[in-house]
Image 1 (cartoon, one colour):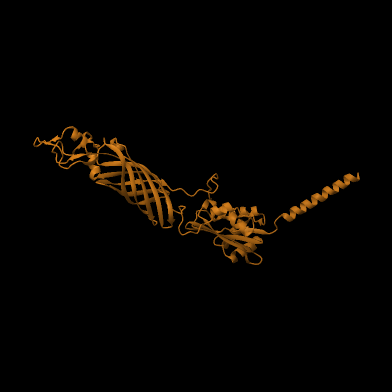
Image 2 (cartoon, one colour):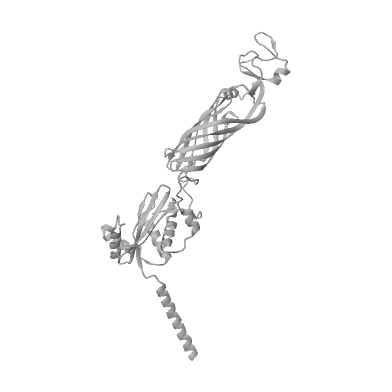
Length: 398
């Protein structure tokens, strides 16, 4: 019997001390969160205030004043509705709410960074209790994580260093991570006019080794680009362009261009230059521009000429062993294949319509004896930065 009474007493004592421990573990200081000042961002002050309350609850150091009870006080006082950011106003608000502390601050979008300022006012002392300012990379969808980091640092709590480093603003004049810059990777389409020997080869009859097409051809391709130097008003780029020409005239003419490009200012003017690579077919022969051995512009290879023992002059009937221009290298679709190189220069501008980028460029590709001159354009959609947690659905602000 005595044993049972002793056990009951011990249980009651344990419950008592457990309750007392729980009581003293509860935060005793009360705090209210006023809407912060938000500049140059899409998120609303009310949404930031909700995030602040949530992060305060997580650190478990204050009793956080209820949002809806607080709204009743704010509605009754006009001075608290807009612009209550200063120490005096926040202290008066705290007195109305009968809390120990009031938190507010500001969230400012400044170019390619977000500056988070948080301050806590001691209502009784009417003075600043704690404050912190920190710069983050401009990732607006991660504002709650930014607040988590700032509040943890303010209260001496451990911060996730990996997340903090990924959100931190890197104060570099020149950077290599596409800060605030356009990326014009995407499809390209355009037209080009051939010049010089290239145009002659295109228009020459297929009977004489030409392509038998018009000297204006379509171009369709894809551009891949990467930024290796960038500031707010300048970008240096490497661009790779895969291109196919002549499809509308039953020809397949592939090429690849590797360019060094520069993009300037908010108007997005751009300039690029570099080598263009393709495939060409050539042979050693003679182009009859005087129509002495057949139609004007007829092409005869050296092997054909030699095999026939020379060509007969259609005007005199004389057998000519060597043509008047001699034998030189010419484009010939039936000739031997080899690498073709040229130098490409392009100039243009990227136009923007919301998140849609529309690059338009004039270009000239120069090679021995001729080249291509034309215009091309493309499009792509500018994507926002990925949130740190890629599995998280995009956050909506109300």
